[in-house]
Length: 230
Image (cartoon, rainbow, N blue to C red; front, side):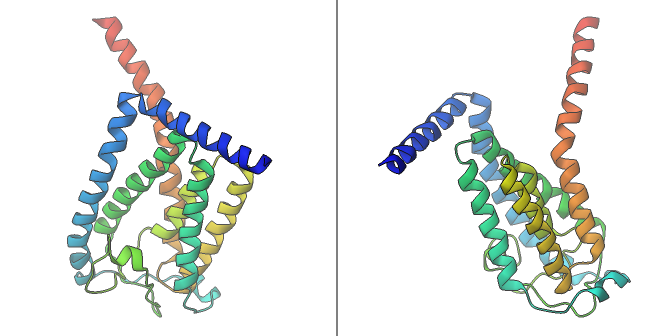
């Protein structure tokens, strides 16, 4: 009985939270625009994938890879990535701003990562075990062949790190931190990334997460100064 009442209260709070946020015109607009941006991004990356695979890149020397076993973790990577995503969504569904921040971060990181891949042409590490991901192969990856040269930086590590940064509960944060380490270990064991790609994922994702909070006060200050000079 108490459990049923608890769920009822939770769903009431969830609905109320979304109703309150949806009253904000800016939030409604951003929530409507974001799916369209993802569709455009997916269409563009489908075309770019063939070009990235066809071009000649540089194969880096990464001695750190020799410390990792060679093993196909495709299934475990798939399970870890999507269970972590669902865990974050389910525990934060009553926090609309947190959910939108998750979506926003995924898009920003995806765009920056795509730019990095275009600017830095690399060949995959020696001994690569091709990662198979049913979802990505039917959305952003080319359908006709697996993508192996989308190297700098790691999208899988970046995704889990996004979940860590967006998580509001300390136990979930601890889980996401461990999941990030495990994801890094698995992608390196499969040789689908260099260690530099993992470090890059952590750096750029953290930068994109915290940059707005650093830029916004500066922008507000400049705007206020311009208004005073008028």
